[in-house]
Every structure is written in structure tokens, then in C-alpha cells.
Image 1: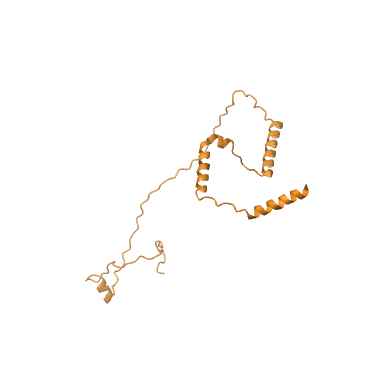
Image 2: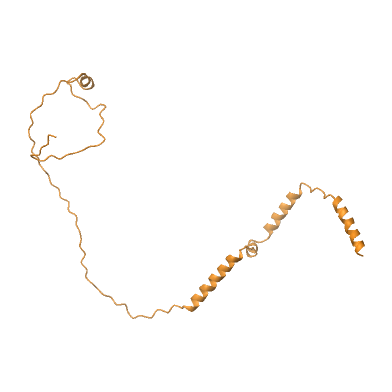
Length: 163
């Protein structure tokens, strides 16, 4: 009987080696996809949600389970005592002094005496001054550029300010 099985196996193997699978028709992919989408639309959304599966690795599932067990043991083991009923609340009144800082705006007018200075002789205007100013030799502000940094110095009465 074993010889017969071996012959059958050899004969089956040779037939399978020679056999060629037929080509799939080009419309097969389209038909399978349309059938799948039709079946999917037929099933209700709630059924798909309730029968869905989510793969969770075993170590993560074990850690979550241990966390829930530990939280349950902790909640049962250390019950919080109910707050004791209290009578009416005690109201204490205290007077507290708080210093208040008020800002004061002081406006003063300062008058400064002007000393009369002797008039200085003006130097003769050069050619650029005459061409850039008016006919009297005064300069105008055309092309004037202010300085980048201004340094002010307050001069008091009697100070040596000739530096």
C-alpha cells in the first residue's frame, strides 16, 4: 500500500509541475474592489465600531492592569474620612494699617538771568557758504544732518565752562 501512495504522490507532483495557472482577467481587480466597498457600506457603523479590534502588546496590557489593580487597592485601603460637621464659621475682624504711597507732581518755573555777551566779529564767509546760503551770507539748513549722539552739559553760575 505504501508503494501505491508513493506512485500516486509522484504522479501528482509531475502533474502539478506541468500545470499552468490561467491568467486573471483585467476586470477582476475592479470587481473585487467594488464588492468589498459594497459589503463595507452595508454593515452598520455601530457594528463596525463594536466589533473592531485593537492590538495591544502584552507588556503594555499587563502594566495597565497592574495600575488599575494598584489604584483599586489604594482606594479601598485608605478611605478618606468624611469631613466633620462644623458649627457656624467663626468670623474675626482685624484692623490693618496699610501704608499708601501717593505721588506728588511738582511744577516749578525757573528763571535764569542771561548775561549779555559781547558780539563777536563774524569771519568772512567762504565761497561755499555764499553759494549754499542766501545773499547776506547766512547759511540755510539744506543738507543739514543732526549728530548721532547728543551730549548735554548743564553749566551753573560761576562754573568754569571754557573747556
